[in-house]
Amino acid sequence: MSLTFNLLQATPSGGRRAQIQLPHQSVETPVFMPVGTAGSVKAVPQDTLESLGAQIILGNTYHLYLRPGHEAIRRMGGLHRFISWPRAMLTDSGGFQVYSLTQLRKVSDEGVQFRSHLDGSSHFFSPEHSMDVQIALGADICMAFDECTEYPADRERARESLRLTMHWAQRSLSHFRAHQNEVVWHEELGGRTQNLFGIVQGGVYADLRRDSAEQLVAMDFDGYAIGGLSVGEPREATLEVIAAVLPLLPKDKPRYVMGVGYPDEIEQYARMGVDMMDCVLPTRAARHGLLFTSEGRMNIKNKQYAEDQNPPDLACDCMVCRRYSRAYLRHLIQASEPLAGTLNSIHNLAFYLGIMKRVRESLRLETSATQPSR
Image (cartoon, rainbow, N blue to C red):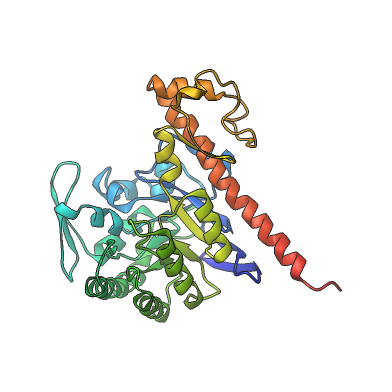
């Protein structure tokens, strides 16, 4: 079963609700996707993710390629089976991780030569190799290999990065289509289907972004992502890029903004018409004691919480807020207990997933209110 996109409702303000039918899961959008970098959403077990309502998570091609290796995962039945995750999954292309290895990489038209951050060993990623690794992993959605444009980047640098990304997008798509029969066979699903999304780049230049979007749409990907954001640009620039690109993407395919953002940002982007978002922020912040709550950000390490018996968020009904106090969570992180990262991450993920659930309901009500009565 390939990707099926069913637009349920569109609001006058641009927001939309949809259902994406994927081989492993029917995903209700707009959706936030927890990031499972190395086959694990850090510190959070899979059954807990399920109980929180996570519909789809991410795996990281670069990290899984380095260890345990994509061929080992293929032999074990693919990434879903290897990590015991029965729901939908997306793998990135490795492009962003290679981009982050600024001092350890060399980019050419053919691909990227880079050194592993683990042991310094030399590796080469081309669009074709990225597709081969992702096909071995077997996620429901794969991403075309791209070059993430840094910020700041002048127009010529952004234009060259865009040229490279479009060249790699076509090669990714051609190789992916030619080798789809090598996808891991999912016996329980009766097939071996994956889908490929293209990634819009172009820095903060609206005309380059439009050029990128138009080229990708002409290639006819299964869905489209807006990449190269949250790399240091002002929030206003992020909004301008998203606003410029969304109208150019097909209304009958998923629209994904990569690597965003803070709670108020993901809500704003969802109401603009973004279907899918992901970010490491909920779990990364949690491991450093930063909690997202209905009253704003809370640094649980602060002394004021040392004897505070209230739950982290008085308005939250997650499993952490139902059971634990601020004082206990502060104690755990002060004592460097691993449980601190787990409980803080569970709360933050519940908060993010709860935002998307409320936005979906709000969009449903907004649409219903604008429909003429019979």
